[in-house]
Length: 245
Ligand SMILES: NC(=O)c1ccc[n+]([C@@H]2O[C@H](COP(=O)([O-])OP(=O)(O)OC[C@H]3O[C@@H](n4cnc5c(N)ncnc54)[C@H](OP(=O)(O)O)[C@@H]3O)[C@@H](O)[C@H]2O)c1
Image 1 (cartoon, rainbow, N blue to C red):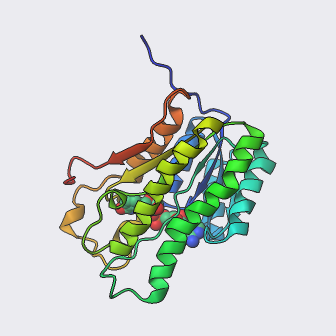
Image 2 (cartoon, rainbow, N blue to C red):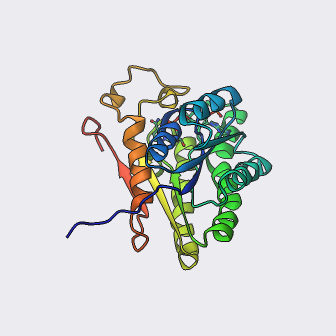
């Protein structure tokens, strides 16, 4: 029998880290399917460019820093004000600074922890009440990493922040199931985005041969949202055929 996926047309999705890479590709794929998107990132100019590309009927942008509680609230408020409701959130904003734990500056360590983990928590805390109030259900798709399942040798602090996201997602999925909110951690291996090289890696690192594209990962996020509401996808890890798992 044919299997019916959820129609995302008309659903409203808030995405952090939406100016490039996975977040931007997710926004593009969602709008293609008729969804409306609220986009957050720090660079106002780039955000405006994404809205122009997607159309102001489909997208609203809020310059914001995920490390700020107030900024996360502003993103969620903008989604509800512009589109009347909130169906899903995609906490995706993240930074990767690589190297030994001993070589990072204190500021680099704080920035990673505050952006990748605290930022995710603040987005969730702003988004959940709005989803419950306006739709009585919802989806949270957190973009973590395979580094959140098995950390590599030169990325301990980064991996710790990604493990924290996976732990948060699993616990939240159990906490919010009764309220009709599903929570998923999408965990990609290396993806060819601005982020992938980050700080402390080189562009031609052989470990990243045959990287996935931002669209590959965005498709996993979108497919998660498309699952019938009777199904929960709690964890989705993905590698390209060219990457060793
Ligand atoms: N690329 C990979 O190899 C890979 C692999 C596994 C997991 N991931 C995860 O995928 C997620 C997205 O990464 P990507 O590869 O798409 O990277 P990207 O192309 O560099 O995009 C990162 C996005 O996050 C935003 N951002 C960064 N810091 C922010 C902050 N403090 N507040 C708000 N927005 C912020 C950036 O915009 P602004 O600079 O304008 O704020 C940008 O829109 C990250 O969580 C990352 O850990 C990536």
